Picture (cartoon, rainbow, N blue to C red):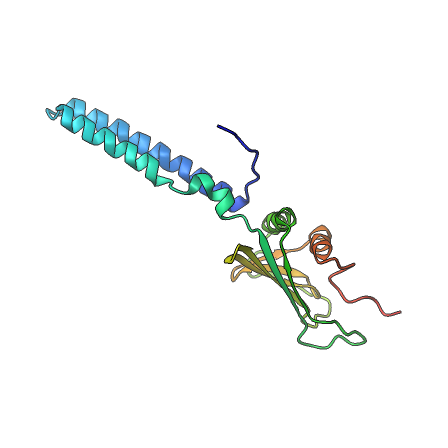
Amino acid sequence: MILHHMTYSPVEKSVTVACFYYILLQIAYGLQARKILRETTMKSTFTRVYLLAGLIVSLLTGCEGTWQAGEATSPNVLHIVRTNPLPIPGHHLAPLNMVIHDATQIQNLYDAAHTLKKIPSGAIFSCPADFGLAYHLDFLRANTLIQHMDLNAMGCQFLTIAPHDTRYTTPSFRALLAKILNLPSLLPPDKP
């Protein structure tokens, strides 16, 4: 058996922990079944084999697919579209529509997004001017969408991961995305 060091996203870690607790629950069920067998007159070999087989099958199938969850849910393609619905005074940004295939960079950005601090529900902000400049990120595994995210490049520069999951971005997160796009910045260049 060859073991490889793998990096797991927060979602994959949650799935693995949930699977671990499921296995513990199944073991507890098996111990309870053993106790029932001792206390009842149903001590036939057939009943014991039946209960043991049920426990083994539930242990083996209960977390089916979890052992390869790291590979199955890790993005290896990133599709990025920049939109600019309002003209930014003094700037013209060309449309941007890119597909990135560097799995390491993609996974680093994906993990960095999930480690950003969540914005509390009902929080109120006073943000700088926002002309709607946004980067739409689709993280895919081959052709299957794993996660869609929207980054507001201006204003408060929030990242929306899900309808009720918006996060503060950091300069290092925005720099990482700019580096992947081979841009000096996600914002338009300053006027000369």
